[in-house]
Length: 258
Image (cartoon, rainbow, N blue to C red; front, side, top):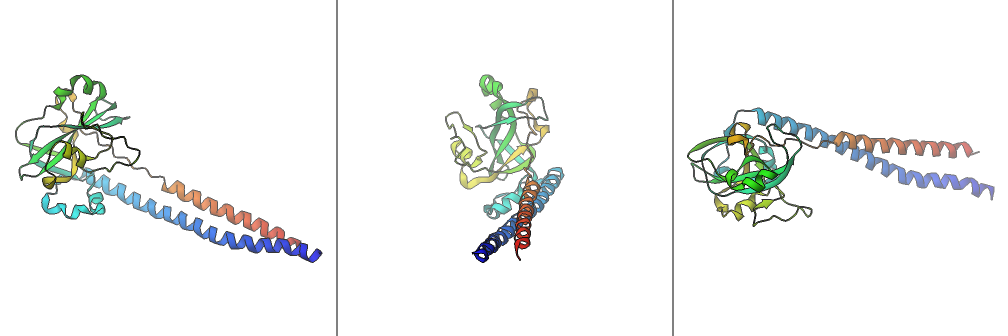
């Protein structure tokens, strides 16, 4: 009876070991995975910072669009400083947003104003002309929708389109308001030819802000959530806790053995 009683803790130790070793390996793997993600995110931030500060280059035309069907290729071009030459077409679409910080005069809830632009080479792209405060949108919408005329050279940041998820409110097509930067859907509602439409949009630089400060250009939010180091420390902390609990229990079992 006494022998059986003594073997119970030993059996528990065997079962604990069978659980603890795989669990420890999983926790360490998750921690290392987050460190890898951290390195990737830091590379992305460095890439974007360099792209924003670089001199503008010609925006990718139809000959390059086939390669952009790959999400990784579009991601590599995101925030690239580009230029286009051509003229605005009539039409406008609005992306609901809020500016907690501003580089210009206006902030708070409002809309990014998108207008179609036809390049001198014949293809089209949606251009984010800038921010419109909500009260201006309500009372002066027709005025801010007026597009500059004539041939223009525009400079801004290339942005990939967003895909709405299940939490995104449906677009209000009647009022042309979107709650995701779904420029493909915007272009469809505006009647643009999808075969001739760039698979990205362009956010204008601040120098293209409209008369009297509206639309307020240069308000691209360049912010990346980077919690990977915190997540890595959490997983490694759990691994250390598991090691501590296992070591404490194992020592108590070994001390009880004759």
